[in-house]
Length: 132
Ligand code: FE2
Image 1 (tube, rainbow, N blue to C red):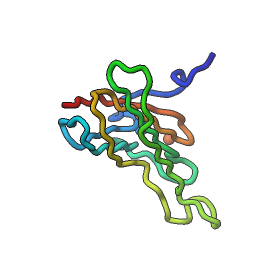
Image 2: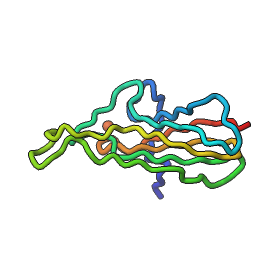
Image 3: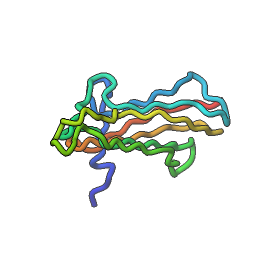
Image 4: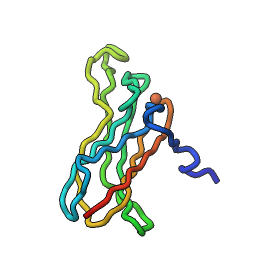
């Protein structure tokens, strides 16, 4: 049986433009205190954002240490990629493929992010967070 894990790609975000990059706005996350998180695609090598080729969405999850199931934190869907009634790449309206959010937890764990390119498929990344 083919599984999602067989088709979702992993790579070094510094070399591969599709990998979602997870950035946390502080070195130490405090228990029960909201902190900021940014997930972006193309941080090192810019990804195209055109009607024909773009990042469609990013999903963010959190898996606390020693737990089996991740929590779904947020979804961001990017719906404007230059298209209009005049045709592809004519509107000048584009949604950028990054998302900023806040969440809180009392447990250390791992933030996981997935992104989807309409041409090059599914990509993932993760970032461990310490909670004090
Ligand atoms: Fe792509």
